[in-house]
Amino acid sequence: MQLSLTKALTLLACTLLSAATGPTKTVKRADSTQFVSTQGTKFFVNGSEFPFIGTNAYWLQALNEEQDIINTFSNISALGIRVVRTWAFNDVTEIPETGTWFQLIANGTTSINNGTNGLQKLDMILKHAESFGIYVVLTLTNNWSPSATDNLTSSIDDLKSSVQSRDVVETFNSSRPRNFLSNDYGGMDVYVRQFGLKNHDDFYTNDTILNSFMNYTTQIVTRYVNSPSVFSWELANDARCNSSVAASPSCNPQTVTKWHEIVANHVKSLDPNHLVSSGTQGFLCVGCPKLNPQPTSSTQPSARAVVGRRSVVKPLTRERIIQDRNAQWKRNKALLPKSEVQEREEGIRVRGRWVSTPTRRQSSSQGVGSAFDGSQGVDSEDILGIQNIAFSTFQLFPDQNSYGPDDPSLSPFNNTLQTGINWITTHGQIGQLFNKPVSLLGFGLVTQTNAPDFVPFNSTIAPFAPDATSTAATTKASSAADANSTQTFGVTDSEQDTAYASWLSAGIVSGVSGLIQYQWSQGNLTTSPNTAISPNNDTTGESSNDDTTGESPNDGYSIQGVGEDTVQSILQNAVQSVSST
Ligand SMILES: *[C@@H]1O[C@H](CO)[C@@H](O)[C@H](O)[C@H]1NC(C)=O
Ligand SMILES: *[C@@H]1O[C@H](CO)[C@@H](O)[C@H](O)[C@H]1NC(C)=O
Ligand SMILES: *[C@@H]1O[C@H](CO)[C@@H](O)[C@H](O)[C@H]1NC(C)=O
Ligand SMILES: *[C@@H]1O[C@H](CO)[C@@H](O)[C@H](O)[C@H]1NC(C)=O
Ligand SMILES: *[C@@H]1O[C@H](CO)[C@@H](O)[C@H](O)[C@H]1NC(C)=O
Ligand SMILES: *[C@@H]1O[C@H](CO)[C@@H](O)[C@H](O)[C@H]1NC(C)=O
Ligand SMILES: *[C@@H]1O[C@H](CO)[C@@H](O)[C@H](O)[C@H]1NC(C)=O
Ligand SMILES: *[C@@H]1O[C@H](CO)[C@@H](O)[C@H](O)[C@H]1NC(C)=O
Ligand SMILES: *[C@@H]1O[C@H](CO)[C@@H](O)[C@H](O)[C@H]1NC(C)=O
Ligand SMILES: *[C@@H]1O[C@H](CO)[C@@H](O)[C@H](O)[C@H]1NC(C)=O
Ligand SMILES: *[C@@H]1O[C@H](CO)[C@@H](O)[C@H](O)[C@H]1NC(C)=O
Ligand SMILES: *[C@@H]1O[C@H](CO)[C@@H](O)[C@H](O)[C@H]1NC(C)=O
Image 1 (cartoon, rainbow, N blue to C red):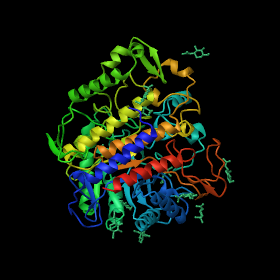
Image 2: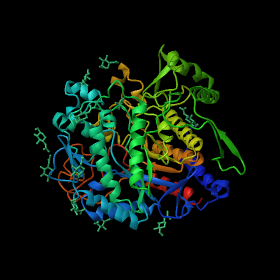
Image 3: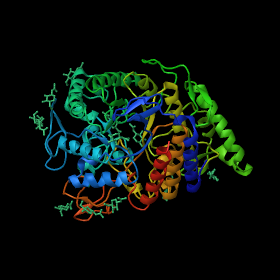
Image 4: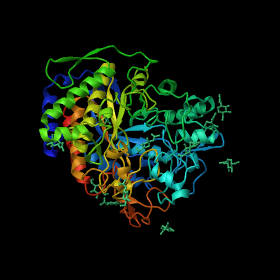
């Protein structure tokens, strides 16, 4: 399933051609306002379909000068990108001496900062977005906001080996300034801690916290209710039961679904102009009981733009997931040289090599996998059934999550590529089933160059030394053998390019209406000490900041450096492909 870059780009070009002649081109004048609306599985703006390619820049509000925001939008829009996803929250527990903050949450009370280092930054972002014709996805909180106090019973070595727990400045003398990482802007667990509670899911269920979050939401949403530049209100990044603050035993996907319904209704009651979406990673719970109506089947014009072809989309079931997977594995095996079949069947992949182990058979009879069985503590289909949730969201981060078991006939990278394509295709079908648009809000792969900077969302330290191991390939196979591997973590730049081009193509042909890469990289930014764009004196030597200009933060997914130009041209190609419909 690995495609060469040229092949992947050709696929994009073919998509362009077929899209230009396919039936999906028929434009209904759904809503001729400049606010984004939906009809069926499509987004509309100004009465025309609005499929988009976008990028993430959570750190926009942390830039030091207005001109930096302008330069960033200018660069982004030079590629033809019209949608940018960014954080619309920044919770602190004490007022910081430097940098941006939006809300003080301390000792059970909250207050908002509407000063020049507060909401006026967000005002500026929306103002300039408007002048570039950019639409901004505004995220209202984050599932992840780890803190040193989450679990201090672990030893430092435990913390280093367990990315669940975390660093931090005190423990590890981290050189990363506040707001450098996406999980360092506050979020759910800041409310939980500051309201004196102890479970992550108190955020979803405690009335006092809910009122407080609704209060914040009210102020942000009403502030921008008439802004034409808001693409949508995203209720939370990656909401689920688990976080670095533990969940109570009673938390289950329905806990998270109920919260989405309450908050979506609240936002919609304040702001009828803009769409509301969840922001989950798209994790599913097939076969779980649902709170919201689920379609039983849907007949849609084929997303593949074949003239006249209609396809019946059925709900996802455990049986179908396993059946489809077995069929795909069988096809892949047929392509594999006979000599390799046996070796792989008997082995398990450990950091790129096939190692013989008797557990292989057990693991090949696995169930649907953690992305589908509710074990992530969220049911994105149940959430999509909520009336005020206008479109479906999902994310794709193979370095942090498993989207299905590995096919022993494929190399690690080919597995990454294929499970990613499957994940995208599955979500395209879910959108057709619910007759709502689907958007991939974030996708990324860590390259070997970026590996030293890689920090999973649930951690604030990079747990992997430059050529240390673990993760992606490896979170799955955390055997003792890992400790001695010398293989570099991360994909090569060219593998990243192949994956990005293939996933974008897969999204376009699967009818995913919005595809947002994670994350943008911007240079020539104004530095200021102790802000996310600090002058260069970090100890990693990775930053290319000098004293006066700097780069946007890199959490392992930034496209700065070697691969930047290629990734940008891949995005640009995709933009051309979707905007010609
Ligand atoms: C990966 O996929 C490509 C394209 O299908 C194929 O040529 C290559 O042999 C595969 N690599 C491995 C190690 O499976
Ligand atoms: C993007 O920004 C960088 C740094 O400011 C600049 O050198 C480059 O020319 C810009 N690229 C585009 C396409 O505007
Ligand atoms: C919160 O309470 C603690 C302990 O009483 C106190 O040290 C801290 O200053 C308070 N924080 C704020 C922002 O009032
Ligand atoms: C609502 O937010 C405002 C502004 O931050 C604050 O003054 C007020 O105390 C909050 N009310 C509640 C009930 O949290
Ligand atoms: C900030 O909030 C205060 C109190 O609500 C209000 O009087 C003031 O006009 C606000 N300033 C800005 C710039 O929004
Ligand atoms: C919609 O129309 C407005 C007003 O003319 C314009 O500013 C905006 O860029 C248009 N949006 C799109 C996606 O064409
Ligand atoms: C803290 O971490 C240790 C070691 O990982 C674990 O055994 C313990 O249950 C954790 N405590 C809490 C309160 O989460
Ligand atoms: C909700 O949180 C508040 C504030 O910490 C606390 O006083 C209250 O007891 C909690 N409610 C429930 C039902 O636990
Ligand atoms: C945190 O990330 C690591 C590495 O991706 C993963 O193994 C672990 O399960 C995650 N923890 C939680 C609570 O999701
Ligand atoms: C790793 O390497 C060390 C030193 O060479 C050796 O003592 C140890 O047994 C090895 N561990 C494994 C799991 O191979
Ligand atoms: C760098 O930023 C400054 C200030 O915004 C701007 O004047 C200059 O043109 C930029 N240089 C490049 C190469 O983008
Ligand atoms: C970083 O540089 C600034 C300005 O040069 C300096 O004040 C600060 O002490 C330095 N910090 C470290 C950790 O070296």
